[in-house]
Image (tube, rainbow, N blue to C red):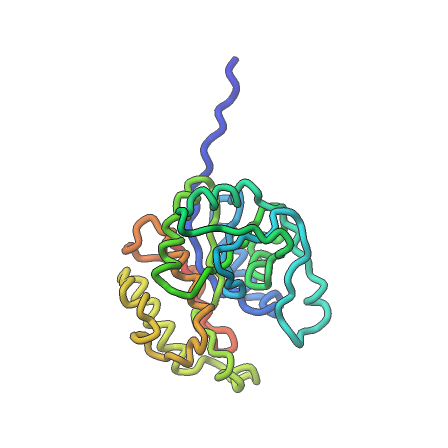
Length: 266
């Protein structure tokens, strides 16, 4: 009797999500949205996540063994600094990524670098069992076209059961939302306008407009005084099967005035 054939892993989409701060974990609606989203996907073999909070050139890969998390936030209650996310490392995935990059795109190992909050906060909501291997990859720069090219080289990983996640925030004008942190409902005009523009450009598959968002998007520079939270979107878009195909938006709305629109590409 022959051995049963192991079915190939299911092809995974690529995601871009708003990761919020640790208080996201106290937001029942957002937790439900993230949990429902991950529950709708095939179970990943491993997760590759690119966070707004790690820029390092050349491309760097986080630890492939369990190391402490990076608590890269300030002024929050003590319990947030005691949270853990003890997912297994992903050394095989790290090896694959190195093999996918050209000679001019070196990849370094950072064996002591743990997951930052742009990675572990959403993963606590989406995969709270901590049982799927996770690898974090740095952004080597904030150039949209370069990050898109990196995503193109990673796209084949989706056929191997790897879930690629870009973690940022659709709008991130923190210096301009004081009144919304104080409880004002809704969102500022610059946040709404940028969010709508991005959704329309994504739906059209208008990469040229998205690449030039600094000049073309309404709401700038208030929506992104610095652009690291929008930049992971370009890795996600690069990993799409058809870059001009409209994505879906599993999560929409606002959180303290910031657009939490999330994107799924196939």
